[in-house]
Image 1 (cartoon, rainbow, N blue to C red):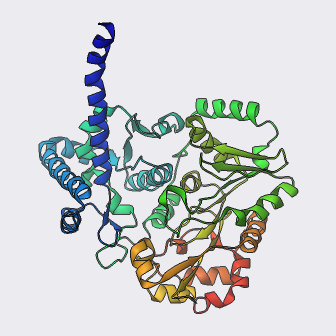
Image 2: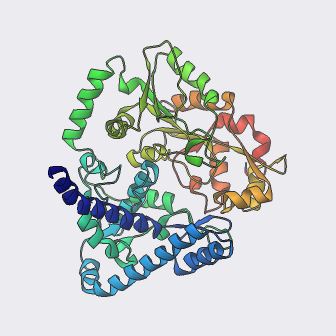
Image 3: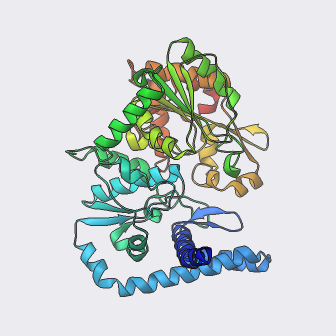
Length: 456
């Protein structure tokens, strides 16, 4: 009888939890959409949702059809609630607060959203209200940042949904993200870097993403106790995205073996190396006490990586999750295997090297890629790129190592040379790289001079 009573009590609670998670799934679906049949990223409008609905219907993809029907119903419901919430919307419109449409499903998109949207609101004169439900794997950010207003109560998150999706009082994804129109062209021109430049012009009396003292103390003590061999100020952190990770496209992934010479170089020079991994990552064994691997699938390590990255000597990264933390914390970042228009190393102490691109087996110059609108949107659409015949070529061991040596030298020599300056000036306005303080590697330009023809 006791077991029956417990199951009766827990049943409604389980139902409520499932309903909550379902609501928040549709919440995410209103932030962006992959438009069929090319699956290009765009805003979740009635038009784009309808395109997907008819595509799934005609192709008998019933499961996706039903999901899209519910998504458009949810959008209608949110728009109706906006009318009911109109007095509240007006109140926030004349207040000093605005919402941010943060995507809290992955660490990369979460930290990128925080970095861009919170700064955008501050530039416009508003403090940000951030909604991250407590069931999210990343609700812990509330424990980290001192100056952010984060609401994690699930009921409040649901009640405030119409406000978060109201353009008038919220920084929404379509205002600042790399979305494409139906012609596969970028809708926003360099939103990230322009916000970066405008934010740097503000007279800031405090660090927007300052850590809480309790968080810093707890992480410091834990690191000191468990990684006593490492001095974080003399340690580089590396994160590499595998080609197979999370069904990634061929654009974002690369091969781990191409980073091994760089890790060996750092260890031989007496630097510590921390590799951020996940549960399925390939293990590396170095007989060196200065090499450590930290699995960020574990909840505590998800928080620990923020502290490690803030305190480390430099971050070596590919385009994946933790990479976005680099720009959020404004730390020195060496971005490798860059395939698009943006990097997360944004200050003068940061560096990047680009992937090469072939079209039907012919290696293209970066000027060719610009003229073919590859960087203006095509690279964001995997199916179209594959259809046309684009294929990316990863950075090799030598390129990565040469760039790393240059990255280390930036600590004492940060002035760009003539080729680096010309490269940035010649880029179109829609390419984020044009506006950041970071630069492309001098050595990479020199070793691949032919690919920069028409730009330098």
